[in-house]
Image (tube, rainbow, N blue to C red; front, side, top):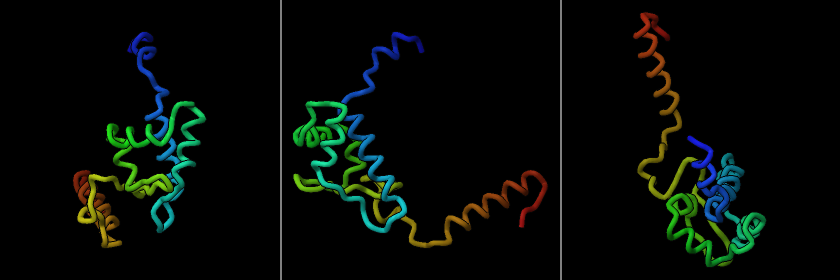
Length: 124
Protein backbone atom coordinates (compact mmCIF):
# COMPACT_ATOMS: atom_id res chain seq x y z
CA UNK A 1 0.00 0.00 0.00
CA UNK A 2 1.09 3.49 -0.67
CA UNK A 3 1.08 6.28 1.84
CA UNK A 4 -1.82 7.98 0.03
CA UNK A 5 -3.98 4.92 0.59
CA UNK A 6 -3.28 4.93 4.31
CA UNK A 7 -3.86 8.64 4.50
CA UNK A 8 -7.27 8.42 2.84
CA UNK A 9 -8.52 5.73 5.21
CA UNK A 10 -10.18 7.35 8.18
CA UNK A 11 -9.22 5.26 11.21
CA UNK A 12 -10.63 7.36 14.03
CA UNK A 13 -14.33 7.53 13.42
CA UNK A 14 -16.90 7.29 16.22
CA UNK A 15 -18.09 3.83 15.19
CA UNK A 16 -14.61 2.31 15.21
CA UNK A 17 -13.95 3.93 18.60
CA UNK A 18 -17.25 2.49 19.86
CA UNK A 19 -16.30 -0.99 18.66
CA UNK A 20 -12.93 -0.69 20.39
CA UNK A 21 -14.53 0.45 23.66
CA UNK A 22 -17.14 -2.33 23.56
CA UNK A 23 -14.50 -4.98 22.82
CA UNK A 24 -12.38 -3.77 25.75
CA UNK A 25 -15.38 -4.00 28.07
CA UNK A 26 -16.37 -7.39 26.71
CA UNK A 27 -12.87 -8.82 27.20
CA UNK A 28 -12.85 -7.70 30.83
CA UNK A 29 -15.76 -10.08 31.42
CA UNK A 30 -14.32 -13.05 29.49
CA UNK A 31 -13.54 -15.10 32.63
CA UNK A 32 -16.76 -14.25 34.43
CA UNK A 33 -19.99 -16.24 34.29
CA UNK A 34 -22.30 -13.24 33.94
CA UNK A 35 -22.96 -11.30 30.75
CA UNK A 36 -21.05 -8.04 30.28
CA UNK A 37 -23.32 -5.15 31.26
CA UNK A 38 -22.36 -1.48 31.52
CA UNK A 39 -24.23 1.78 31.78
CA UNK A 40 -24.96 3.46 28.47
CA UNK A 41 -23.60 6.76 29.68
CA UNK A 42 -20.26 5.14 30.57
CA UNK A 43 -19.88 3.85 27.01
CA UNK A 44 -20.85 7.22 25.59
CA UNK A 45 -18.28 8.90 27.84
CA UNK A 46 -15.57 6.50 26.61
CA UNK A 47 -16.28 7.42 23.00
CA UNK A 48 -16.64 11.13 23.88
CA UNK A 49 -12.95 11.10 24.81
CA UNK A 50 -12.17 10.60 21.12
CA UNK A 51 -15.16 12.24 19.41
CA UNK A 52 -17.00 15.15 21.01
CA UNK A 53 -20.16 14.66 18.92
CA UNK A 54 -21.03 11.12 20.08
CA UNK A 55 -24.35 10.72 21.93
CA UNK A 56 -27.16 8.20 22.45
CA UNK A 57 -28.58 8.85 18.97
CA UNK A 58 -25.16 8.10 17.46
CA UNK A 59 -25.09 4.84 19.43
CA UNK A 60 -28.51 3.85 18.07
CA UNK A 61 -27.41 4.74 14.55
CA UNK A 62 -24.16 2.78 14.88
CA UNK A 63 -26.06 -0.26 16.15
CA UNK A 64 -28.44 -0.12 13.18
CA UNK A 65 -25.82 0.49 10.47
CA UNK A 66 -22.62 -1.17 11.65
CA UNK A 67 -22.62 -4.97 11.74
CA UNK A 68 -19.57 -5.05 14.05
CA UNK A 69 -21.45 -3.05 16.68
CA UNK A 70 -24.56 -5.17 16.14
CA UNK A 71 -22.55 -8.35 16.76
CA UNK A 72 -21.16 -7.07 20.06
CA UNK A 73 -24.29 -5.52 21.61
CA UNK A 74 -26.94 -7.97 22.74
CA UNK A 75 -29.46 -5.44 24.07
CA UNK A 76 -29.36 -1.80 25.07
CA UNK A 77 -31.52 1.06 26.25
CA UNK A 78 -30.88 4.49 27.74
CA UNK A 79 -29.84 2.96 31.07
CA UNK A 80 -27.51 0.07 30.22
CA UNK A 81 -25.88 -1.96 27.44
CA UNK A 82 -25.67 -5.73 27.63
CA UNK A 83 -22.96 -7.34 25.49
CA UNK A 84 -22.54 -10.79 24.04
CA UNK A 85 -19.85 -12.80 25.83
CA UNK A 86 -16.42 -13.14 24.22
CA UNK A 87 -16.46 -15.69 21.43
CA UNK A 88 -20.16 -15.28 20.82
CA UNK A 89 -21.96 -12.81 18.59
CA UNK A 90 -25.49 -12.23 17.37
CA UNK A 91 -25.07 -14.71 14.54
CA UNK A 92 -24.19 -17.62 16.78
CA UNK A 93 -27.05 -19.21 18.67
CA UNK A 94 -27.23 -21.49 21.66
CA UNK A 95 -27.33 -24.39 19.22
CA UNK A 96 -23.73 -23.67 18.23
CA UNK A 97 -22.42 -23.34 21.76
CA UNK A 98 -20.70 -26.37 23.19
CA UNK A 99 -22.31 -27.78 26.32
CA UNK A 100 -19.93 -30.75 26.61
CA UNK A 101 -16.89 -29.63 28.58
CA UNK A 102 -14.56 -32.38 27.25
CA UNK A 103 -15.33 -31.99 23.54
CA UNK A 104 -12.63 -29.39 22.74
CA UNK A 105 -9.96 -31.48 24.47
CA UNK A 106 -11.06 -34.61 22.60
CA UNK A 107 -11.10 -32.74 19.31
CA UNK A 108 -7.57 -31.42 19.81
CA UNK A 109 -6.40 -34.87 20.89
CA UNK A 110 -7.84 -36.46 17.74
CA UNK A 111 -6.27 -33.76 15.59
CA UNK A 112 -2.88 -34.36 17.21
CA UNK A 113 -3.14 -38.10 16.62
CA UNK A 114 -3.97 -37.58 12.94
CA UNK A 115 -1.08 -35.17 12.53
CA UNK A 116 1.25 -37.64 14.22
CA UNK A 117 0.14 -40.44 11.93
CA UNK A 118 0.84 -38.26 8.91
CA UNK A 119 4.40 -37.90 10.15
CA UNK A 120 4.62 -41.66 10.78
CA UNK A 121 4.80 -41.04 14.52
CA UNK A 122 1.86 -42.09 16.61
CA UNK A 123 0.92 -39.84 19.53
CA UNK A 124 -0.90 -41.52 22.40
